[in-house]
Image (cartoon, rainbow, N blue to C red; front, side, top):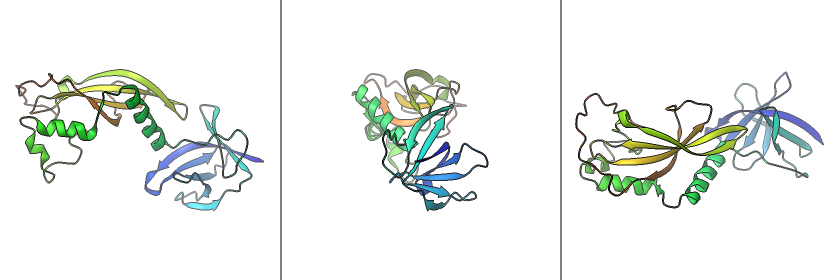
Length: 217
């Protein structure tokens, strides 16, 4: 069987595909359908699907100088399909939730916030974004590494980030993840898992002037 070595290029989530480019120069491009796993040759300008790759072609996905996946449209011994990032993200959230069964979901966290004195205003869908995590006291954010995972040869840290909500004074922990190579405080992705203590609600925070009230994604 013929072999092609490729490296991951980017995720095109709008069209449900991952784009790869050949290791050899000149570079050729290839698409993998996120849902079906079918591989196609790709146009070099707009990365649109071109021709379906033959079943007798093995595609070696290379990262960090080693082969991390053996994929293709055919069946062959030792096949290890490429794992799209969104599948990795879902698997990471599910496995961490199983390890920590007391964690709460997005909907549970939102219901808790809306039930607090001062939280009623956030129930108005015409006033705020659906992502309700905003008006936070960023002066007192704490961050802790609580786990690790890897994808495509990249190491990730699982983070427990504690926030205080204004004006309710509600203290909660949001679990997120980001590449281990990035510094503390860098952007991270939300696992939509939360935790809090029943007794951690304090009075309305004093001295709220100058607090960054940007919405947290």
